[in-house]
Length: 333
Ligand code: ACO
Image (tube, rainbow, N blue to C red; front, side):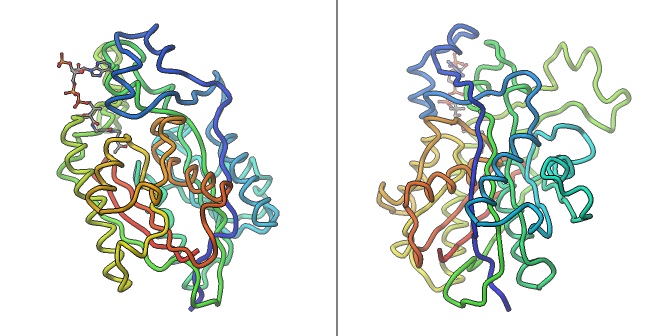
């Protein structure tokens, strides 16, 4: 059975840098509060009119270039996002079109697993590759969060956290038994769906969004931050141990851990609970904030660019987010 390998990675973030200081002009907050509670110094927000499909296409082209491939080499697209350009169709088909692949008929699957979307997508893509269904898959995580948050004091607990961006990976098949995706583990617990969610627009209501919804801010995401924190620092280490156990490996074997960039304090607690050295955990939340489905592929592309991964290294990915959903993946680079 072939193994899934990462052939190339790439990312794209908007040019516009939004500093904590800029946010202090729009809401009652401070650079100190944001840095202490979240580790974020700045994030990127799109200019009006920018689409996630366009950002995803730029990230994808970079990943394809790194892999030495053309868009026409892609057999399937898997795209994870919680902020699609439209309710339907999914952003995957717009990405397919942006890449000039409309005429090929290749499938484009949108994954809706929020912060865990990239890992859910990897799990699907890995199964397709191992089964021989598709040989080359473009896996993308992309978000435009900035247009969906309440940038006023009312929404300050969420508004300071989120950023926009896209990350992509080109996945291929290899017969080398010593390389590739060793395992993926994905989980969900719907019990906590409303602890981190966006209430409106909602298809069980007619109309799906009302003037009252807008007035009450139900179209903005909301979260019970402390509960999210508590579950995140439990579930991510748990998922990492699950992956290690399945592969007969130990924490000491991990060369690089890329946790979902939700909050620097969450990542720090995950690192401590696992007993990993600081040098083995990748963090970039200070520069991009939480880009949700895009945090892992952006961080991975940066880590590759910085030469942090050598062939044979053990890479561990883990995520936790809205749903709740969470998971892990182990990759022999
Ligand atoms: N600036 C200034 N003050 C703020 C801000 C802000 N941006 N946001 C909230 N506050 C205030 C609150 O109103 C509250 O004021 P009060 O005491 O007068 O009521 C005070 O700060 C403390 O609020 P808490 O919510 O208790 O602050 P806490 O220390 O719990 O930190 C935080 C909040 C950072 C959100 C924390 O709960 C957390 O880290 N949660 C994890 C969730 C998370 O990071 N999610 C990311 C998205 S989800 C994901 O990707 C998994």
